[in-house]
Length: 253
Image 1 (cartoon, helix red, strand yellow):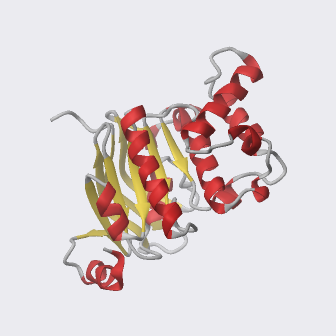
Image 2 (cartoon, rainbow, N blue to C red):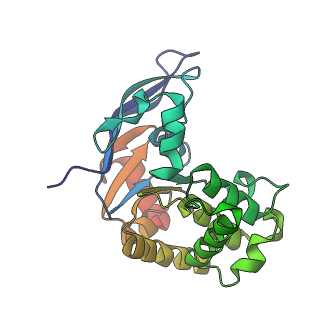
């Protein structure tokens, strides 16, 4: 069996201001190339904190951290700030939970995707014109039918579904090997959720993309993921745990 492309090993976070207060406790997961791992749990279970930890976003000033986040065997939590910034986007990208707040409201969607492409050198030396072409191609890949119109829009001019797809385009425009998608369907209706799940299947197939899919909907994630990690109060629990059963009885599985 090949080594995982991304793995968390015994991740534990405690608040510096409140020693002994655990945010995550001994959390582990393993993501193989081309696979989807679903991370599910209720509100406050630590899902978004885990997503941020996987990309090294948790500041040392706030939390004490133990454990490792391994990228092809290298611990990214031991990287310096510059190396970590280069690694993000180029190797692993995060699609944020709230696309409406993740985009800068004073710049167009297209300009923000272009800046991401330029910052990571994904324009292949072709300047802003080449970066603009690449932005349009990834908006199209994300399932947007009229990418030229969308790239000229400001975030508030787009519907929730289009903003979420544009956020995915920005996360993918540097062609990372891994996408961490934090609650990508939380603000969408059932029809748009189904379309987005089909898009994830397409991206995995066409880009050989590995995905950490974070959500509260056990049923949706189970239909898509190759493996499940269930979180409760910052810890990984078994499917027969009371909190996991509560989610199931609520109709989410």
